[in-house]
Image 1 (cartoon, rainbow, N blue to C red):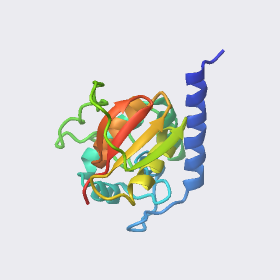
Image 2 (cartoon, rainbow, N blue to C red):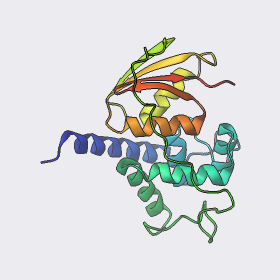
Image 3 (tube, helix red, strand yellow):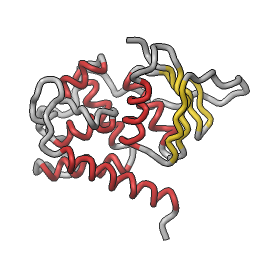
Image 4 (cartoon, one colour):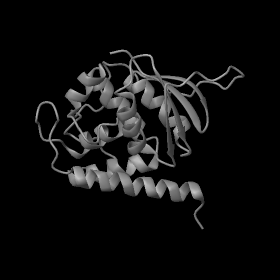
Length: 205
């Protein structure tokens, strides 16, 4: 009988696949280019489900080089089964073998070596006895995880002033690894964590 963690992962997988099916046929919010399934997934996990972007525009938005962001997001996507399912769906949509890198985003040479290795795996700040930061806003996300969680965080950080702090409560078991990686990707700062509570400082403009 599957345990609660497996059941939660199955729900997140279903949610991601549902989002990708709904996003099918989307175009980049900035340049208008048609998006492949892999770009839709990368937009989803970065928190831009409602305003997806092509990889080039997403990299420009996040202030990163295209190839480095692409390779980093690949590692992030493959670190969790629910996101891997979305990647395999995109491969099937484009007729790409499950274990192959899609030609829509990778040249025949594969992962770019000129950009250097992928960033080291992000981890949450160590717990200590320091009082938690003062929060300017709070959000109880409950069991929400993966794309839905990061989209919710992004929407709540957007109207906040640079330097303000959002206190997040999220019980999904993948958050301790997922949230530090997302903060590293987007430039927001994870000030403190004590699962299921996290304090995120909005980055400067």
